[in-house]
Amino acid sequence: MQKTGMGRLFGKSRIQSRLMSYIWTCVLPFILLFGFAVTRLYGYYKDYDQLVRNITGVNEYNMSFKEEMDEMMYKIIIGSANWTDPEKKLEDEDPKELIKNAREHFEKLEKNASEPNVKTDLEALVKLFNILDERVDDILVNVEEGGHYDENMEMLDMNIRTLTSLIQEDIQQYVYDEATNMELLRREVAAGVINTVRILVIVFFVMTGVIFAFSKRLARRITTPITELCDMTEKFAGGDFTVSYHTDRNDEMETLANSFNSMVGEIETLVADIHREQENAREAELRLLQEQINPHFLYNTLDAIIWLTESGETKKAVQMIQDLSSFFRVSLSKGESQITVKEEREHVRSYLEIQHYRYQDIMEYEILFDEEILGYHIQKLTLQPIVENALYHGIKNKRGKGRITVTGEITGNDILFTIKDNGIGMNEEQLENLRDRISGKVHDERQHGFGMYNVEKRLEMQYGSAYGITVSSEYNEGTVVKVLIPKV
Image 1 (cartoon, rainbow, N blue to C red):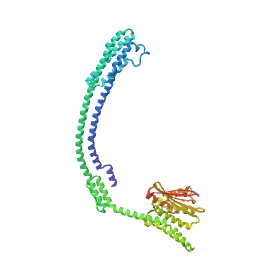
Image 2 (image 1 turned 180 degrees about the vertical axis):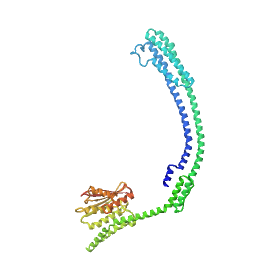
Image 3 (image 1 turned 90 degrees about the vertical axis):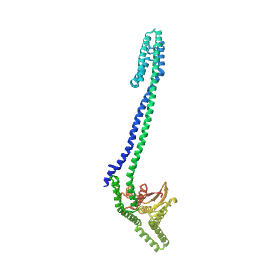
Image 4 (image 1 turned 90 degrees about the horizontal axis):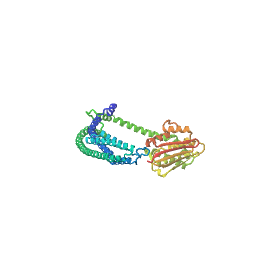
């Protein structure tokens, strides 16, 4: 049933299909209208751009062609541009090349021209360039023969300058006709933009009405069953487990209704499971306390108190009883899982003081906590299992007297505790095994490190994987255990 519901949700969603149909119904007309407007405007732009390019290119000839041609031919006739000697010929003073470039430019314009008046202007210009090319040839032949100076000057005045004047006039006529076409195009663009805007406004109001009608109907169809289901959910949240929701719709709402009814039917089982989990958690916490309160530690402490009493060391016996009382008072903490750092320090001190009575020949200790961390909170029984580990697996296995130092300080937004001993330490293999037991890769309650595994697991569950225990050690040098917790 769950698979069918998920398949309907992602593969054949009826609500999704309705929404997509609604969206495309609203959006498609705008897309088509937008495409139409863009196409028209782009066509106007291309025509306008081509006109501007044509006028700009022709204006270069309008400004310079006549002057350059007349001056070039004059220099050739008087000999300042030695046409007959290529080595002495001035650069860029080839009238044939100038005519060729101009003629090719206007032939290309003629080929692409569509307006009749513009095409006529260009045809006339190409003919004039052909005639001018022939008259230039006449003068160049005379120049190469020599001795035709007066004739050439007359041909320059009567033919060349007359033709260049006609060419310039025709170029100006062409520019005028293209400018007229540009104005006509401008008017066409303006009219087209106005018509497009009118169409957009009409379609906008029509689509607004359609969208409003569709939205109202679609919203009512979607929200009504959701509202009904919300009402059922509120009743269920108020403790009414008899509610159920039914719908005649064949879409995702049917799946939601079935899921809701199934959830209501299973909720009592889930609540029972939660109660069982809570009981298991309490049992686990009790088991943890029992593991921390080592019966051998209690028996040995009571034996030591009896021995001190029988030996007449009543003051030491009373002090030991007070330390034992403090130790158990913090261990129990009225059932609270969080205590202050100050209380945790007292718990560690009580434990070490009791052990000091028993192992004063081989152990001494020091506790150094910064005063500013004492008001923060910590999970109880965090440091004592690590201190116990340092005593039984570090100090007791070393010859001579050992020392345990416990420090606490703030580092950034965290609190760092360090438990250091100068006991027997560990080699690389032993250290790696201990780290595996602490991380849970190896789980054996009878082996060294199980108490530290409990501490690591509780810190990770409470604060996340960024916090917990790190261990470093060297054989015959000692062991350093660091505990990092956030400032809470």
